[in-house]
Length: 282
Length: 260
Image (tube, rainbow over all chains, first blue to last red; front, side, top):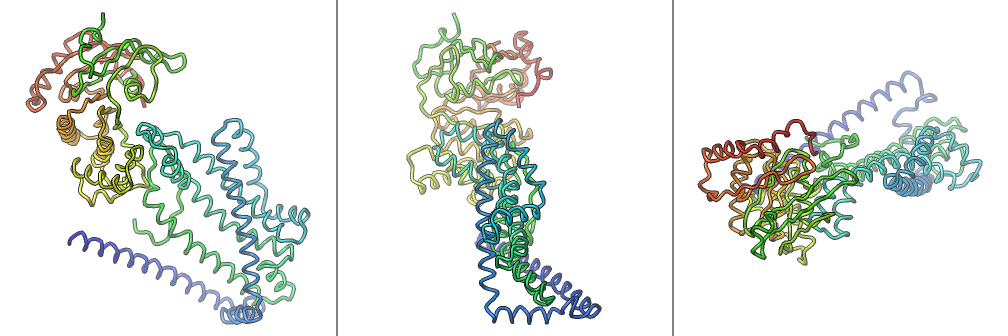
């Protein structure tokens, strides 16, 4: 009975916490819209179209059937580049974690790749792949992979700790060792890097599309610029931001919240700095 | 010759005979011998870094000795460490069940046994639902103990399981552990660097010298656990320290680097 009441109390508390966090977000968004409106009043429609004009432009673009194909194209290229980058970065990072030689060879390359500006990759990939979706995939891949690489290496390096010794002492089968010890450990290291890479993937994808003119949201932005149609440009930006927020809140935040439950302590391993998830009551 | 020959009469004893081991060029154990009859608690005491944990790993079969012989009839050793080593991503209950994955049990059976063990070590079902970070140090150590007992071991290996707890809590857990061990007639090897703890807990004390470890002294305590009060423990500790061999072995405690 008391346990039941406790559970209900916790549920209510969680819901209230969520709502409170939601109000915070709504209030800050409202503030931004107010500032936007003021900016519009000062500078006029050419420089800064009002939120209403932007919404109208977005609605018009949607009715013209431009938005959905662009979103699908950008999403497809960004996500495939992201996935390929994460897989490549995680595999090479794991390799670097396992072998000293591989680490010495790969680490400087990863650092070098991190140092190359994304826009440089855009230019190169346009030269190599032309105005195709492949240029987007490639650019996203090479910007995401080195981010994931470092955390994967760190994760594997710290695997050989107390937990592994304990699992061995209990003669735990290999399958359980991988699924219950290695995998959660690796995820706790990889997750922050993967979240960062996902956000970056969208930005880089839009940037590449803008310069390649190969379609997608970036291409829409380029067209709006050519037509000096600021309302349309703002509408595309709004779309990118909305997509990014949707992914963060619907996909990453629930994962982040789940991981926060146990992330705080892994014996014998310092944790990489955790991104604090929104709306989590400590 | 050695004590091993002295009372190696019973076949159901833990027999360690002239065991030597080295990590690379550095010798850790140098001809360690002792016998522990089944159903008894053996206390291995020595200065930090003297190779106690290595000896424990050898007893559990995790490591093979380079020289010498370890013989015992036990088939299922289980460990509890000073660091409870719980999986942070599993609840207390699932951590207990984790140690059972090596046994041919269904998931439901593992969970049922884990829930039973929660009660045995004095944790509530609500505690079982908690993740390790939400448990106190003493509760975590109970979970680690439950995980070890859950596999129904015939040899229990305890590596300074009370080392990280405050005095009151460790006394409480010592009594609990001794009760659980006695109820199961479980052969147990307890590693510690606390002489009072080993006097309170063990039936047979084996004092190891600094690394490379040799047996510096052996001492049996016949008094039943239930009547070992503070006075007895204090007197016994003083009596043991009066033995020059024991005092010499343990005096290194502060000068030696920590094992972990």
